[in-house]
Image 1 (cartoon, rainbow, N blue to C red):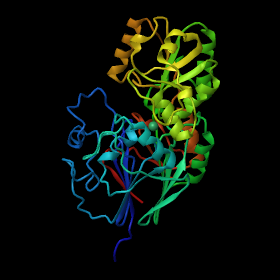
Image 2: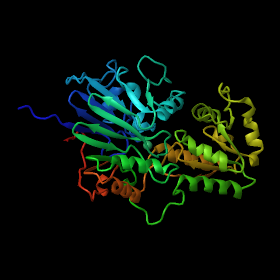
Image 3: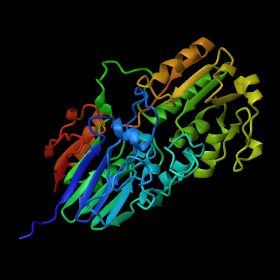
Image 4: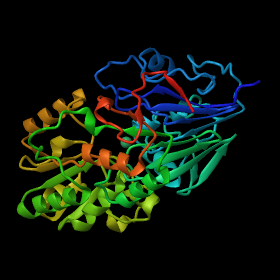
Amino acid sequence: MASKAKTTVTFHSGVMTIGGTVIEVAYENAHVFFDFGTEFRPEIPLPNQDLETLLEYRLIPQLPGLYDSKLAGSQHDEENFINTAVFISHVHLDHTKMINYLDAKIPLYALDATAKILPLLNRNGTFLLPASGHENNFTRDIIGVAPQTEISVGEISVKLVPVDHDAYGACGLIITTPTAKLAYTGDLRLHGLQPENVWDFCQQAYHTDCLMIEGVSISFPERAEKSLSVCDSETELVERMARLVKNNPDRPITFNAYPANPLRFLEMAKKISRTTVLTADMAALLKELLQKDEHYYLNPGQITPSTLDPALEVAYDCLLKEPEKYFWQVTQDFENLLNNTLYIHSDAEPLGDFDPAYAKFIDLLEKLGIEFVRLSCSGHATPGDLNKIVSAIEPKLLVPIHSLHPEKLENPFGERILPVRGQKIHF
Ligand SMILES: [Zn+2]
């Protein structure tokens, strides 16, 4: 008698580390993968970012049949799957960076919002890895779908359910096969602007056979005293910025934040008492993505993006000469800033001290006499909130991933496993 078909879940990468999650769910001749980024290891000096190199340094897994066959290092699929699809939960690079290395014939799905913002973030060709045979700023086709859409891949169904994260358009996945119901959180938090999305995801994932949950916040030892630069919510963060601006009426005040979180920029523009002025690239992103008009300036030599209203341009010189009027985003030419400038670093690049560029950046500002203030708000649920999410879902099996210490998250409702790279489990 033939054995009954089973659902197989393979943890190709992104376990015991933060970033580069690639998980495969297979049932009979169909399989789906999520996500499609690379591990972020800025301390490793890579000779280049070719597919072969990333494979060699184990920043991405070998996935036969998935990568563009023109790229050295790609392997042929020996198993002959008939249906293949890839899903991305959100735009962050550790979830998307290698999508241009994916075979162009394989469909790639994401929420509409993610499908729209990703090419905008890659408009200068500096975000994603480049596709073979295309310009650097090319972004491969992404099939954008509305929230709660279910995609069928063979007998596997994948539903894209919005969550809240510091990336616009983030979702989790609810995956149903003939033998299992699985849930993947992507990255999520309860202290953002849309916590109701996370509760809805929990409800849809209730009693799942397997909850694959991110555990970024449990990666680090809990500090007895909270760092002053960390805000408990997006709302608190913008309020603290507004206070800093108010308490320093005569000083030049600048900032930078991460463009994948455009809602933070809009909140700032709304709540800060001075005129918020963005780089033309960021203003164009807000215009094209959200039809929002904000003030902007051009960096030296830059031409005005065609989507922007020239009436909203503020001359670069005015930003420097009338500093008390503006709260402006600065991403380059820090040496042009006046030496009593206050600069607020709000989850912008370089992201943190794990990146060697971070210390250099702080040194530079110190030399220039610019005061550096960090104000951040994590995109990841706190340890307490991770427990709340697990309690709301009551999973039969818990699989903490995307974490340096997944063992810190427990499952009072059933089993838990801590997979190693390449491990398969069956349902
Ligand atoms: Zn993320």
